[in-house]
Length: 430
Image 1: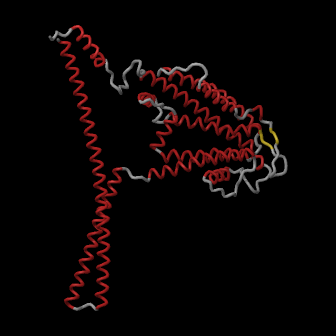
Image 2 (image 1 turned 30 degrees about the horizontal axis):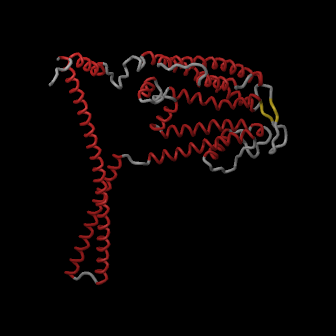
Image 3 (image 1 turned 120 degrees about the horizontal axis):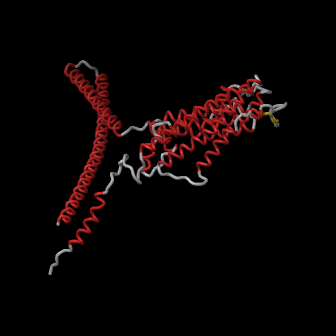
């Protein structure tokens, strides 16, 4: 005996099945607001403020770096003490402003992250980053240390060997280059508020490493050459500072007072050539060159990888090469066949008219055999190239058929969803 279905039960099941359909949200709806995605206008405004604070930091960092380089020249040659004192005070004031901008910049970054729903509490990486930035900025030439120096012993030269205190503090400019690189990455196309939102959809993190990877993928030669130039300039500068105490006494053998010689030594060392015409004689200089050896190997090896990857043909380029090769082989076959016909015609004509001697007949037969062998080899190459082209076409046709099957499967899923919706509507109507 059949019983009538419970209409209340059917309505409850239909409403439960229909609820996710009425409330479904598009997967890549970047403009939707709610708990899943933030308000794009608010986060974009906060990101622009963060970028503006970073550009302000960049400007004052550039001013401080330029003044420090000028001050280093005055310290190295012990010239213009009054002008040097003024520059040191200007550097000191700009560094104080720069420390304040570190706090303001990171506050703007924290505000941007909070607008996206990321909350920070307690001691975190952000706090550690702020402390390191302030420490790097504070370790700059100071007007209070202008008259201080300390001596050390060296086995290569005789005499008083010493560093100026502010001379050593100028080495911190190598760390400030990281700030310039950070600003460059922050203002690139691959580091923006939109990039961060898209990365969050795919469970990725839009950090500086993601920006570097994106630039390496799209502009590999530019990134690698820029890294090589930075390596040469920055460590050439550091090497000149580290070897300056010996340059004050003896510049006959290793004259590192010249930027050109310092950069040449970095180039030779980073490329593992090591001519030995210039070499370091201080402990700090050897530490710098050890770092150059490690970083230089990374840069040079990455350049080899980039050149190797760029030398590979893409799928379409490979098709073009195969087609051109087939056309070239076909033309070569025609030429060789024409040469065989020509030689055969000359032999046939000479036999009928007895114009050739026996030696000439033998020579013409050798030529015809040679052209016949060449035609045979060329024909085999043409057949192999044609077979390779057909294999690629079969693979492409296989991918196309697979793509078509995926489209059909997707269409079938959509039809099933529509059928389920219609069934639920019919149950509701009953």
